Amino acid sequence: MSEENNTDLGEGTENETAPESQSTDEAEAIRKTLEPQKSPIDNFYNPEGEAIVELKNAVIAQNAHPVLSDVSITIRKGEFYYLIGRTGAGKSSLLKTLYGDLKLTKGEGSVASFDLKKIKTKQVAFLRRKLGIVFQDFQLLNDRSIDDNIDFVMKATGWTDKAKMKERREWVLNRVDLGTKGFKMPHELSGGEQQRVSIARALINDPDLILADEPTGNLDPETSDDIMKLLRKISENDRAVLMATHDYSLIRKFPSNILKCKDGKVVESNLEDAII
Amino acid sequence: MQNAEEIYSKRKLKSSGQSTIVSISLVLFMLGCIGLVILISDRLAVFIKENVSMDVYLKDNVKEVNAIELQKGLDTKGFVKSTNFISKDQAIENLKKDLDPDENFVSFLGDYNPLPSSITVNLNAAYANNDSLVWIEKSILENKGVKEVVYQKSMIDMINENVRTISFYLLCFSGLLLLVAIALINNTIRLSIYSKRFIIKTMELVGATHWFIKKPFIYTGVLHGIYGSLIAILMLLGIMFLIQNEIPDLINFRDIELFGSLFGSVLFIGVLISWLSTSFAVSKYLKLRTGELY
Image (cartoon, rainbow over all chains, first blue to last red; front, top):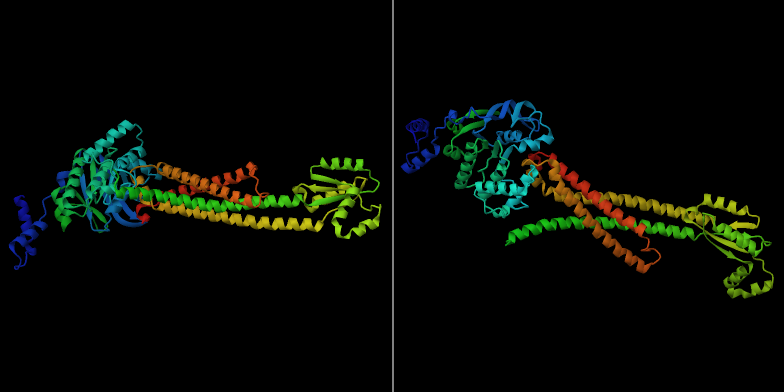
């Protein structure tokens, strides 16, 4: 921990000192919980990267009711963004707009070169082939094995060569350390393993952008760390990742760019602001 | 090796398909039964109409040779199903038989035979209506040897009226039953698709096109329709055997075309409703946004 951080912490926690009755250990524990690591927003940009997500003055709406307005963001290849905000602040609506589940009616927006305003229903499937979507509740096809889950995506997205499909399936499953569990049904796997399958599924078509909606929401801290390492590794391989989360301890552990949904707007933030 | 949970899960999926097939087959069987009743009633109506006879009485001076010639002439007419010539002698014999307990009456006549020779004409069912009968009567009376043509006008009216009424109600009932069948099969399929709505949405989210998602559902739906129809057809065959045992004249298994069309219709309706219902149900869930699925 840097000295600067300690100084920040001292200033930040001045008014939040533990009552005298509390032991020093307890006060230390609270202090550590509240302690924000420095995550300067300038450190995680990749200005040379190709822009994958571009929103300009966009209005994100659910059933014609605006949830977020004046949204202007750009996410480039190789960048990892957290999307934070209170429950109901519009995180999921923003992600849904990016993967074409909600229509963009006002403002401008493009994802992987697809114009979100002009995109036709038939084209949405092709937009999603450029993305990898990871959900909090995994959303695996529970009526078939892990191998078949992976195969379904490949067949649905135009893979026909069985040898290549097998090779790719083994590659993505090995990448998430599930190479030996392809024969299992989703319900036979733990939550962390199911989430890794959904990440493997998202990686099949080598997407430009991974959209993750609270991927660690149902997982224990250790498994969450594993999933985070995996997602970070993906972004380091020149892929963009946008991950909605409530878990600030993860942000502290794996600092990166932060977008915050607040009062109907999306603003760039740092961890200190995020916690406040 | 499969564990208990996996076996249970697979059995659950299988039994959901099985209950869909059973529902489809029961509804189609019900529809097939009405089809069978319509076919049998049609056959019954034809049978009754073809038994309505027209008696053509000949003049006394007509020789038997000429009468037979007239009978042959009638046999060639399109409206005639069959004819039967009854000579004067045959007529008196028939009368004797009919009036058996009162033989004195016939013996009272001695050698005198007041009965005319006649030709009984059974018409094809299509001509057993008053308009045709008037025209047929007129055409037969044109023959100089014919004295009069007798038939029971009121009975023909009654038969036609009853057949019309029964056919009308049967058609209304079968139409209603067809609607019930469509609604029930549609509902069964919609429920089975409803249970898979999240799977459908997941498929959509991983980049599958609508047609790619629909294809296996439609394939399974059509397969369920075929299985359900075949079970319904087997049940109908069972019912038909039972009816044939009781009333052999009503069902003739050699009438392949007639019953083939019934079975074909059951199969066609089963497949068509399953296909359309599956297609509509899947499309409905494909059109919904994720949040609208709950």
